Length: 170
Image 1 (cartoon, rainbow, N blue to C red):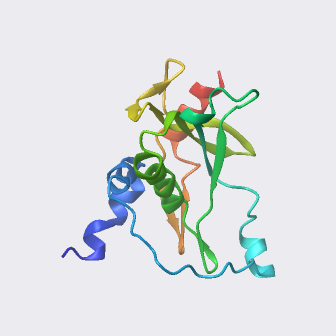
Image 2: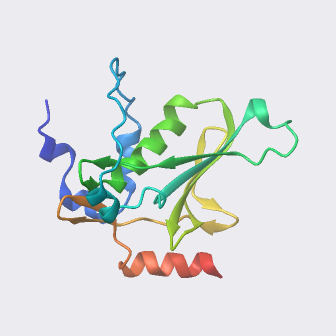
């Protein structure tokens, strides 16, 4: 059995989100007991505003495409453990939903990244269970991660990420 530091090497995770793609191919564990929801404390609200999610998934289910006014189903990702944030795990959970939970049930699925309250930056794109490398003839954004204390966040200061954002802003 591999040690945890072999599976989640910080150097590998800090590069970009390709490691998320590898981890998301593993099926999620089947949980039998759910923990009750614990609301945010005042201190946690200062650390992280739960209305500001980093990633959202828009998915177009096959059985709802004929519904009038259907514009897809939006699923938010929020991963908080105690008082720290793990955006990497949030992205991986959305990828796992696409690859395992909703397999063969959708026509298109796109994961968007939130920057300054706008979900305009696509990170992953799937069309009929096949992963695509582009959206609207533009390459998808590659996400670098950084470790800030216990928080595992998107590195918004990375020059490659800024270049991809400028490309999508045009």
